Image (cartoon, rainbow, N blue to C red; front, side, top):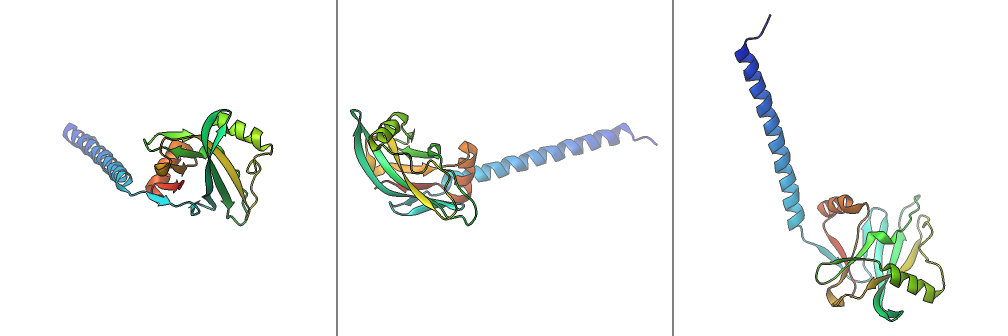
Length: 178
């Protein structure tokens, strides 16, 4: 038994319309998520307050200006806390960025960090894996922003996609320097 050409073309139109509605639904959902992300207010944590990501918390315990090799830097003392019961944690400085008053993101200064560690003469206290229930305090060196009062730290694991998802689910979270 064969289907007539009219029935086949109607079925094809129905399938095409169904795919179009499906695509429009995804576009609407993506637009809603983007709108929510853009309009979600940021949370600012004062120095000493911890921002927690899963079982791991981060808090600023101090900041200071330092002249290292003739250049001025800001040194941020960041406590890394492993609040897990069974899991160890490896801290990576690459997840921490300083955001200046102009909105520019700054990574840890490699040159400044090397100079600080040479002056300190000791190893990085957070270089080893943190066993569950322990913490360490690391000193992170950033180029000195022009206005430290509005500078803030942001911590993001997993690159830009992880940062986007984190911002959508939990909101933008920043640690104030002062």
